Length: 170
Length: 171
Image 1 (cartoon, helix red, strand yellow):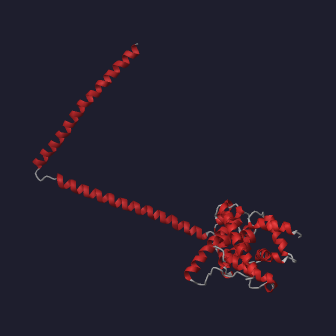
Image 2: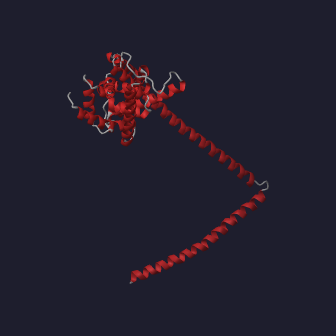
């Protein structure tokens, strides 16, 4: 296995991995570090690439595990506060932000950030990245039922809160 | 993309119940991407637009270079060899240590044995030593005698077997 294979098979997943790490960590810099580490690990394990059926799912799984490790060490050190509802909004806000829809999108961002870890991971992988239930269960090492149940809970939690915002104009 | 309000309502309901396929979810994102969304759908639209917008987030432009550079810096399999070599020599060292320990204990055991034997069997007086030896030899010969008597019994069986065989062959 050489660098060319790495560039063709592994590197194209970078943005998906980055977004997932960002979803978990809520910090661009940390997410970037994690994805870099993922790639180094995958490169060092290149002798076993033949056994990996779905390279993207494999990389995503490593991203999840390294992000969790990172999250734990950050929380232990208290380097930066990982509040329940940390904001993962763009720095370069789109013009929408000024409109009402933009404001609602900010609410959505906060709602999703406030979801429990697993639900947040699953709603991201499904609704942002468009993975199948099968792929998600492989990435997160969960069985299919757990994926579905957690997605259902996540969507309904978001829905309930959105409806409340709508009703009271929060 | 055009979608009448009834179909939209149905699809969104299916979405909340996690019954939509990936294609249907894509349809929803595409629908809400467009303008002219009725006010009543504002929050739902915000959700799907948010998903859509999140997907545009990418790593910075130098990311590939950084990764490739750090990968090229990796000591290509050399590290693996060093690790393997260290592991192999550790294994050999462990084997040698076990062998040395075994030799040490066996030698100690032997030494203590021979020391005890020589302490018990040494007689100052040659006459006494001779008597002791005779006693020991007598005991051995007695043992042999007894063994011979037992062996004779086995002989009986042999003879009987031979007899049976000869009568059998005669028949």
